[in-house]
Image (cartoon, rainbow over all chains, first blue to last red; front, side, top):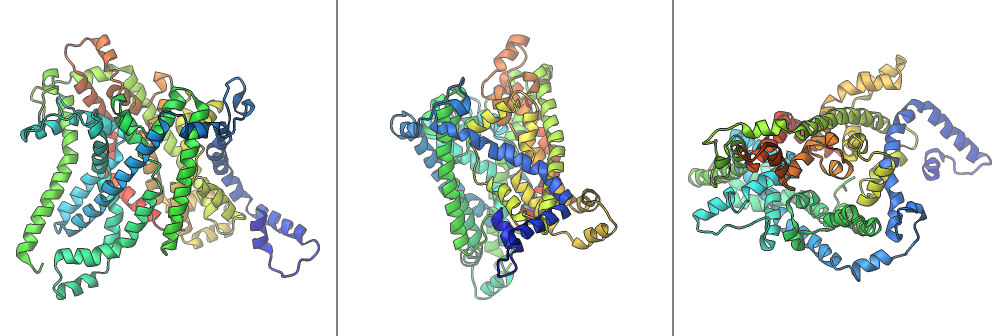
Length: 325
Length: 288
């Protein structure tokens, strides 16, 4: 706070006795001049203090042996015990960490390019009315929760009555238990998330494509460039900066492998390939009530996630683009 | 345009592809709708369902007899309406001062808020805080933790910052109070941004389920998404059978009916959603 104060009022080069006091006075004057605005700000700041900074108090559990009778503060410190156990002792943590990274990487490889492809395809369609209507339809699944989607998908993907297996049956494929088969669960996660989000995620790329200078296309057409050549040599390079930013931001979220989706679709049969850090924290924390260890796992995830986000945001800035904030 | 033959073929191919994609998104909902109005035998028939071959409204009758469905609906509407109203008020009160360049320590206050986008205390510390605040099994747990959304707050603040200053200045000369300027000048000018932010909030509230799942115990305080989750995932449909007998409904059609009842509100606001959400993304992309 002092830092800000100095910047605001230090306009002289010499420090005169009593400067500190007059600076304080100046600040008080400013505060009084803005007293209603500052009063307005109180509920918002209280909200942030309570619900965003408040939980940090409980993070100490990651380094403690939690005993309900002693409470958070009174429980004894155990240092890095939970973190050592995580990597050296816990039977499942390494598998869960691997699952998280594997699923996130699959998403990066298979889900990330889809909205770009869709935007390029939609951009080529000349029938404007059709384009508008199809965009509306493609946005819809984004607004439905994963609970609803799980309901729809369990019916659609059912091995006995599901339409997907019914259609596959036309081609002589035996029924596949998409949500209960270890080999199929991850591909199903990827495919269903593409299905739900591809339309919505394409908006950003559509907006970027619209801003491409049309004169470039005209010049290219005169030079005899074909449609695909225009896409490869003009459209894609023109939106490359948007693609790069989105890619980096997605990399920054590698520790989030999609809790809402997995939590609503998985079941004990596929835990081995689908249990991620977030679902694990939920089960060991809120189901098995191991608060201290669950806090430690959550803290590990958050710290790694924070480092990744800061690093990727820094990379975006380095690229000469404006960062996220 | 120049190459008519190849062009036409490409157009047909692309259009067919997009049609297929759209079909994959529309069909499941038609299927579910059809099943929800089907007799048990029809509901579990494998294959394509466009409309029920054997029509029945038993699934809806059974669903409507469930007290938990009505509780769920009431609580979801409560959180969407009250939650969004309080959200908008809290957001305006916070965004307006932060939009004023003359506010002392403005950078500091903004930093305090923006920083929260980069970290969180984690599930367990948050859970313990909510419990110690007395919000466990309390409907306010739906409203208070979601009172402000940082991304929406920045969108709203940027929008207010871009408003012409002259109007506010003239009001100030007339001696209007800050709160009056906010509600009589800033609010009417910010309606597009408020509509966007309000719809975001309403959809977030309607779709929220995890907070209700971990913080709410009593059935009469539960939201419709968790009710639906129980039908789908925990298969608690068994209880329905115990109460009403197996005869005239199947879990498939009851699940279908519950799904349709949960999707419909979203479909009703969808035209507005599309308009304001897409616009919101554009407002949001203007960095301040």
